[in-house]
Length: 293
Image (tube, rainbow, N blue to C red; front, side, top):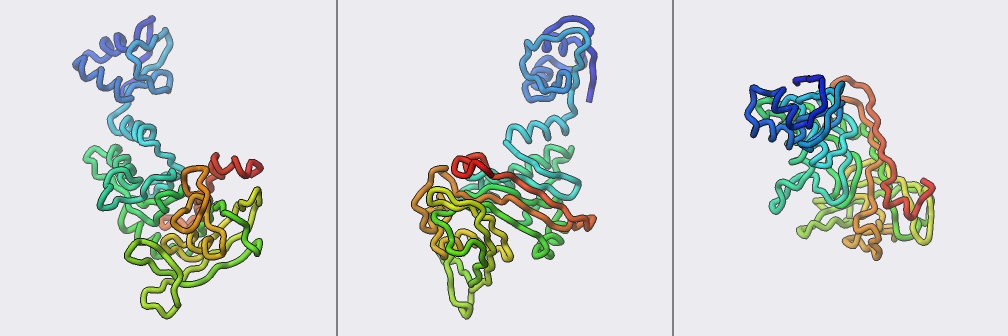
């Protein structure tokens, strides 16, 4: 990083041309364009930004500038980061990882780009610990090494995972546990099967009703197991599909998204053993139905 103090009135680009005489003007314009210039601690890209005596101008190093730009340009909401972990709030509509059709518009791709931007040799990368459905939002964890990913996954049953879900209708019981066996078919649809089925996966979901309003209910859902589409199938199975989940029987979709949000995550840090706990509030669109949460 290079730092300068402004001594007289000037326009930012003119100041940079004088202060950075060792660089070509085209290079300086690139530095300015791509967010590497901060004035008094704030990113500035407008070449005619006025400077006054006493202003502090900083030219960020490549790694820091790229990392900060990645967060804003890619729309990343990083909840927590250390040398081993990333906890991110995934927006609804974004894939966790790639498919045959889509490789780059994924959270995994974005976070890899973010990590690579911080290393000179672009060796940084992330590893997926768990996933969220494309149309769900909320907290998700990535590891910064394969060994840490395996350590987390090997003890993932120790993690506490909670979700907000808005359902069509209210469960008959205000609190309850849904337990059965699930299977995914060739069409990517998950459904209930007999425990004797060779592909059956045991699934346990706990829930409690937090609020009711106009035929909808806000549930807090706690996962004991983590099967694909588990919450969606279980809510549908008790006659209360999640709003926006046409795949599993929902009739309404006012938010144009699945009304499912990963709101709470707690697990022992595999590096330090310390319990890490993260929370994410009820998404703003959900508050249109439940404004008192």
